[in-house]
Length: 464
Image 1 (tube, rainbow, N blue to C red):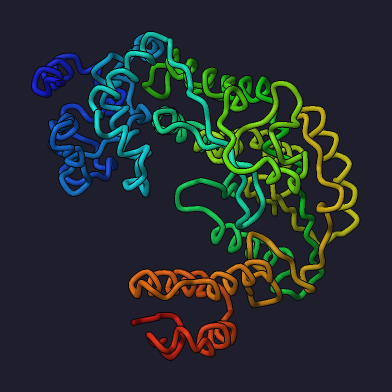
Image 2: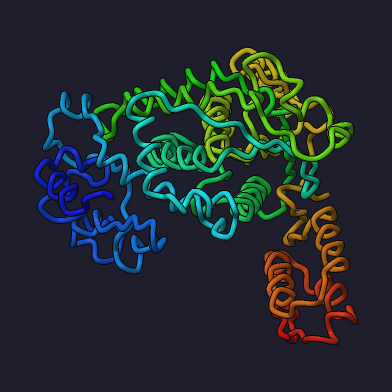
């Protein structure tokens, strides 16, 4: 059992050891920007309870003010640059960071067997994982490989739960460092951004270029062929290391340990001893360009890992900087591998396609998809991230609507609470679009749903 008081006293006696969790300006009092309840009480950071017997491991919660952030930017120079550069994390601090990563990894997974199995011996499992990471002998365990069909047919590699904890640990250490170097119009897997934000930004760019649809406006949509399967892991490792190295003397983290995590995660081959779930026939309909089993050597990232989502943005940030700084494209945005450039000059958009193709091939070893890279007239409408944008109105895309209708038809009406939650989730999605008539037809005319419940006048809420 971890001696909480002893660990806490050691960390408070040696402030440098605890600075991977708190910034320099947290001493003698916390920075107002920490944004955690009860932030003035620094003892909260160590109020953890690894109780394997009672399984009461959820006392480090935001309501009690126990949440902490692993990495903070230095806001003053109270430590010398040499100390920052050579800061080394200790075992007690890493255990605390791993516990936070565990809590992040278990979100929405509390009833999964693999999560319950890990939690049953939580303290021993975290201590063992901590020791492997500190000693440099950590090895990822085999992943589960399977095919999903919604919203698209994809090959997914699900990492072992303990490896997901390491992914969250790495993410907590580095995501702010990477994200500060992203452009504003990078939308994927970034807090306070996402699909709806990306749709609003495309709408903004169209209105800016067209002056409220009073001038010509064209959109170049760029799609990269088999993006995740063609990411070169050596190039990715180089980009990550170059980015991290530029932040030395800015963030107080163990750069040597972070570099070890980067190399371990990036270099791992997900095909090694993977557990293939389902039938081999499931792969027959999947194009080879979307499967890791057919990629080039040392290429491809597994879809489904948190680290892959972060790395996908880090890799294409090189392309983002090229479009914004070299090509001087002001109205540009990207969500994973779906990018767009808005201009009032169709010929200009045609002229930069070869430049983009050459840059991607020479610098990132990627190719644009010849059939999905096209120029659209904004007045005729354009589909992006599940929405269809037309002048002054935004509809849900046909494919997204068809998936919702299909799920409504196949929904079992045995559990009223689940039915209510599911219908309200669909209505919540549709509420982001101009969809009153669609909601009225799809939901209002559904006899099965109206027998057990009712909708409000605007068809935005469903109640049993």
